[in-house]
Image (cartoon, rainbow, N blue to C red):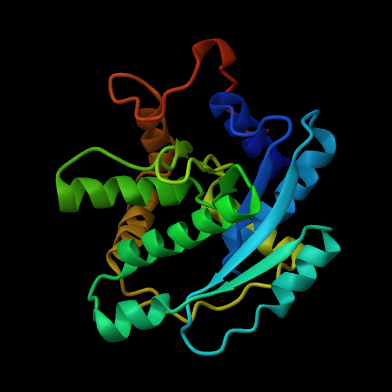
Length: 247
């Protein structure tokens, strides 16, 4: 957990993700990434000098019957309030629109539900569990399918609701997420999505895995490009610069 918390501290320092008084909602899908983020933030608030609250929100996209009781139990053990929002996102995407590449629209709709829930309940920030490889895969998707050098930022503000989206584990390697999920025995819920593992993002995941076999430090090089000029998609205050290591 030391590495996980170190990466959160680095991201927090670099991008000012968490401030005293924040009411932070954590988007919890039931996957390994969001469960680790929830667990790690519950520890982070104990040793940081910032006073902030945590709440968990799960969006049920309505693809069959999914039991989120294990997620609710984890939240209870961490003393974090849990909210479940039921939606018809799955039905809209797969039955009405019959999307062949549904990921972007699904993510947008889930994020809208999360943001609206935050606004309705007085949460000012929404924490999402995107890790290092997620950012790199989004970069590759933009490069190959849009012809531009772009990925999401560790901290953004949604213009419609004013909610600030933060990504505290953006520096954390996915391999460490898998390791911590097993170490903590987090109750991962299998994705009910019918195209799970068959999307363009899954293609980028396999491409990045191939790159890492040839060039083991490829993710670090991508991260360097995101952080530094002339590319610098992730701007941060040089005066607040934190050492590269997450340790």
